[in-house]
Length: 418
Image (cartoon, rainbow, N blue to C red; front, side, top):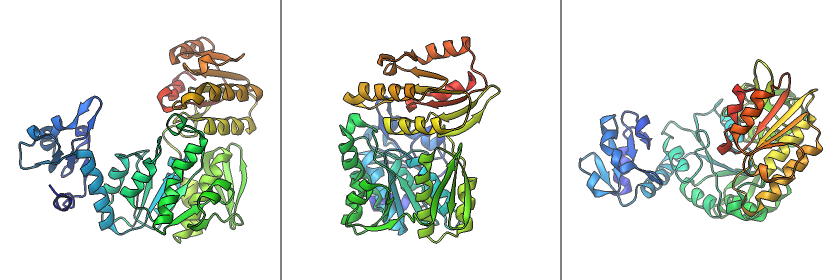
């Protein structure tokens, strides 16, 4: 089946699903394959649950006129997304970086929604499957699209740009994330800068933080929109970030001075698209982080700074330094393993242990296989269960507690214990 014919069927409802547990009536079901599943086997189930069509790549499952056979389901999904993007004819903003992608994306979305019908990546669906699904969630009523792009190897951002064809791009920062795939911080910079290469080649526009020397260097030769550092100023982060924007004071619900650049990016992009100052202020003050990203959670016993969505050496260092600057008489830090660091893993975990020890928190706990191999005079636990047992026997009360670790550690489970 050619893409034009498939697009005609997609445009009947502008709905695409890949999970038969969440089929929407009228959607096209794409039978993707994974390491432990074969979506082809669920084609009939998808039709029974209300899908209008199913796209499969194994002939034996194409036993209905509503089941469409293609050479490869994933490739077809990506091609359909690119075709749809060309039909939309709207500005697309692409966003990548080592830290803060999702928060920045949501801040931009909150601002642009004040003036435009805006569609953005849901959660962190930012890979070779998530980007096509984001594009295909846009409809003819969408006026601006925001596409988050993630990567852990070279050439992934280049590939995602070829699918999404962005008009604008922003790189939050370059940090020590996914070093296992990138090899080094230089590899990170090269990979993320593939977005700049696309923007330059296609004469598009980049939003640039002028305080980031690497952004300025790597974006040379591209049409730039710089943050207005004369009009946006950091005021405090104790614990919530407060900034000034022109004549307005904006009290955000975000923790950590590292969120200043995320707020600045959102303001810059909102200003570029002519969102009023009043709407920018309202959007930023009403935005509340979710999904364990720098959330302040008050329990019966403690106040938690729950930053357990993900972790890498750069973001963990920033979190520790920010937490150290906050005012509280009793502060506890609980850190979980940082994944995907490759040969740098041991060194980077030891660096974090040494930094945490130097800051003299009331308590410091490290959990996970990687942290358990470090040298520390603080308490380390090889497993989450071991940490849980300790915390159950040694209750912490009236503390401000930072919780941070990679997603696979699922440290949000500590909330019930604390």
